[in-house]
Length: 190
Image 1 (cartoon, one colour):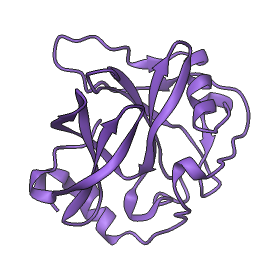
Image 2 (image 1 turned 180 degrees about the vertical axis):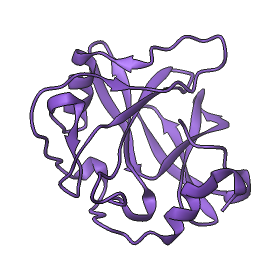
Image 3 (image 1 turned 90 degrees about the horizontal axis):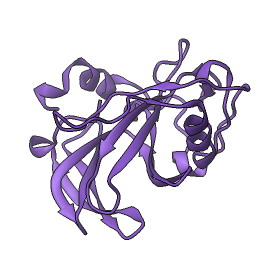
Image 4 (image 1 turned 120 degrees about the horizontal axis):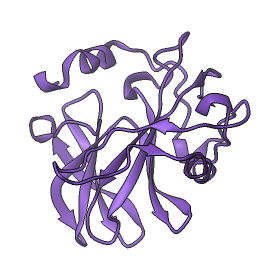
């Protein structure tokens, strides 16, 4: 692992697979009921303003697209049956996608490693009108690359190991296209 990945990367190497069950797009997570807002962190370039939260209505729409329903306090139930608060991050992807939202669901108080070596389940959502559409869903730490396809930035999914899958934009979604070595992997979206 790269030194820049820090203690989280070292922890991920030592973590058993826990409750890892399929891909986020294929599972049906349960929730406990009502919603507020999800705090977000921007990856926008300096000087660019992106909202740092999803409103109640936006969160509900995003969770519907992810096949999740709103829960009290903005929480959802992860794959290990624990209520957790998802985190969201606006991500500037450029081209026809523009700004997207990365929503991550991690482990809870009893099972910090719910998603095993991957760390978190994530969904990358594109907003069109009032609706959100999933353009990539997987497990791991999402990183935005400097390369582009169809004028939209390429992505990589990090985790333990020495090479990571690269995803490129193809009209309406990201598709897996190759690998990037650990030495060239940028920091994940925060």
